[in-house]
Image (cartoon, rainbow, N blue to C red; front, side):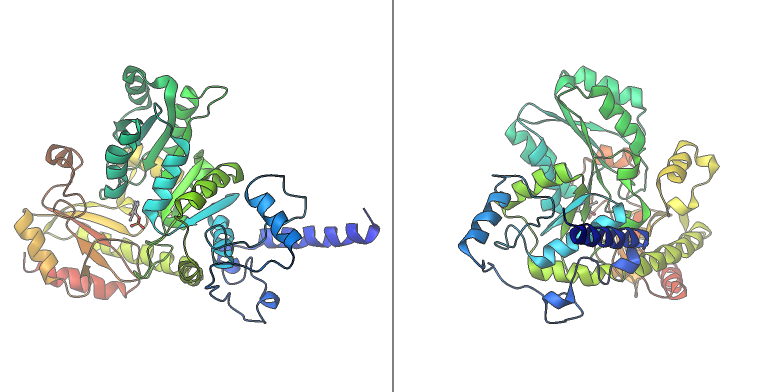
Length: 433
Ligand SMILES: *Cc1c(COP(=O)(O)O)cnc(C)c1O
């Protein structure tokens, strides 16, 4: 290596280190984008193109060798642009920026949260393998696991948030498929009641059933906490999935998803994504990059608002019970311990029981003026819905009761409006109940 080359490398390394010291919110405006490659445009343009021109046939050959894994990447070699199902600048820069929040090695972005989840499950589960999953799961994930994975001969086993480690281990052993356990898939906090599952305990169970030639993977759907409020990879998870439709997108105007983890795992997921064709397009990539610039201020405002709304609800005579992480105290025992260990904020999702039943819940919902009556969550505007008849209407009625999803339960997603206006809206709607 020449002396000059060493000098350049040293400077590059220093640049990398400097960037490492910057916080993600500082890097969201520029990370991974070079204006000089796009006629000086300050923002990454939308690369609305299906294919990319090679400078020479030799270059095309070398790009394909890397894309199809025919040879190893050189030490300073970067993957060239080929075709937008494989890679596109809007997708790649977005993926690099997303890795900063969870401090993951790599990221794959998809056209929906469901395609992130289904591609991840399909890549790692083979016929005869066992998948352990927590309930309640997001309706789409629940359907995919119960009706699609089982069609491919994948065994599935449901566990409840309140189960102890030993109880889960025994269930796995009794299933007769313990030797084929391949993945534990968990949503925490659980939707809609904010029940918490200890991610480090999931890791322990996974390690217990891992064999030398088969590591049991832990995958966490972190949509409810977004990339700010909980970092599952730091607690032992192998992969984190998001519906980027929620906090990451944050404006109720785009459907997208993401999966994060080690280079090795994400590389496998990206390969299957190439063949399923479930990657996000350039327009989605651009929209999400714009959203990421305000991710932190949005989420901080949402959680500050949620704490105020939850406290108001907690003191209201027509409210029976409030499910919000910010109201947990030591009296809540294990749940409080997990919250303190695992969550960086109580988030902005609140559920509560109104006194009465469906009639009272509907009266409240029909009288809201600022809160919009809609499913989904994590957006700038506040939303309200009725889980028992909407998001969770296909959950078995008996199981619904077990999970506290009763007719009096209402779910709120808190936005960035003025908290006093939100509280006033809830107050006037409750006055009709
Ligand atoms: C919305 C959601 C999904 C599905 O994401 P889409 O972007 O709608 O495909 C998955 N998991 C959770 C927890 C969600 O809230």
